[in-house]
Image (cartoon, rainbow, N blue to C red; front, side, top):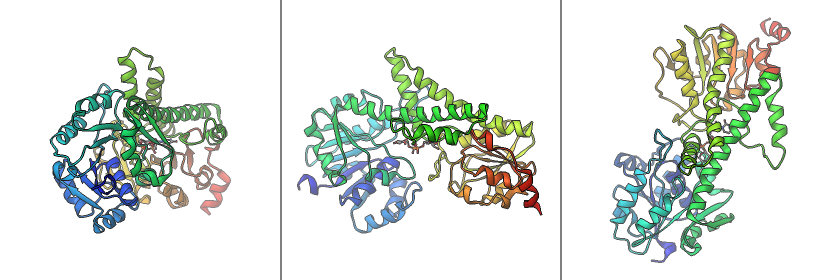
Length: 442
Ligand code: UDX
C-alpha cells in the first residue's frame, strides 16, 4: 500500500477532528476516525454529527455511504494501516490558565501500543502551548515522526475553513517529515509555511491572541464612542479600511466567548509568566473582555433603574452566531448575572434547545415569544434577529427598551417602532423618534 492509498487516521471527533475528517474526505481521502467515547462513535456511524454546522450531516452521510469514512472504537484498527495520524483532541484550560494536556498524552500513549504497518507521522492539530510538541516528539521518536500543524477553523464554518485556509503551517524537525501531510492538502493550492514545531505553536496561539486583542480594542473604541456621543460603526469601519489594520474582528459587542480565545490568551499569559516576560497585553485583552458584559448590563440597568424583579427578553445564548455552542458564552454569563440581580429571563436562541438558566427563567421556541418582557437584550449576532420587524414586538416590551449587545439591529427601525435603542458605541442614534412613533401607533 503506498502512502497515498493508505487511510488517514483522525483521533478525536470534536470540531477540529470532524472538520479534518469531512474536509479530507471531500478531497477524496479515506478516513479512519477514532474517538475515546464509544457512544459518540456509535452516533457517528449512524451519520449523526456531534455538533451543528450547516451541511455537515449531509456530507457525513454521503461519505459514510461511499465508504470513504469509517469510525472505530479501538485505536489499533483505526490507526494500524495509516501513515498519517492526525490528533485533534481537547486541550482545555486549567484554573491557572495552563493547558490541560492529559487527553493529548493519553492519545499518544494509545498510539504507542499500535502495531503500525508503516512508520507513521503523527500530526498534532490541537492547540498546545509552545514546547509541547518537542516534548511529544522526543517521547515518540523510537516509533514515529511528529509534526505540529495548527488549525485556524471557526465553529459554524469549520469544514469550509478547513478547505479554504489562508495558509498551511507545518512545524517539523525537517520539512521532509511534513511532506506526507502536505500531500493530503496539495489540491487546495495554498501557501505552505515549513517551520519548527515551536514556531508553529506560537503562530497558532499568537494568531488567536491577536484576534482577541483586536476585539478588545474594538470594544474599548466602542465604549469611547458611547462616552463621546460618537458612532462606533463609522469609526471602526473607517479604521478597518486601512489595509494594515483590516476590518475583520473589529466588531464590538459583549466580548469574545467560546472555547478558544479566552483559553488561548490565558495560556499565552501563563507562558509569558513562566518565562518572566511581560504579559500586559494578554492580561489587558482579558480584562477588557471580562468588563464588557458588565458594561452592557450597566446600559440596561441605566435604562431600567433596577434589574430586580424585571423580566428581560433575551435573543441569543450561543457564544456566536452559526453554532449551538454555549461553552464560555458571554451571553450565558450575562444571563447568569441578571439572575443574580433578581431578573427573570425569557430566552430564545435559534440553535440552543437546552441551557442551564437561573431559577424562574425559561427558554422559548420563537424570537417573538421572548419579547413579552420589560426589555429586550440581543446577546448573539444571529442575522435573523435583524430581519424581524421591530413593530412586531414593540408593543410586547412594557418598558419599550432594546439593548443590542451585538449591534445587529437597525437603530433607526427600532427607534421608529417607538422603542429606546441602545447599542454598543451607537449612542448617537439611540433616541426614539417621537414623530415616527406617533405615526406607527395610528
Ligand atoms: C476562533 C478563531 O477564529 C479560529 O481561527 C480558531 O481556530 C478557533 O477560535 P471561534 O472560536 O470558532 O474561532 O469563533 P470566532 O468566529 O473567532 O469568534 C470568537 C468570539 O469572538 C465569538 O464570541 C464572537 O462573537 C466574537 N467576535 C468575533 C466579536 O465579538 N467580534 C468580532 O469582530 C469577531
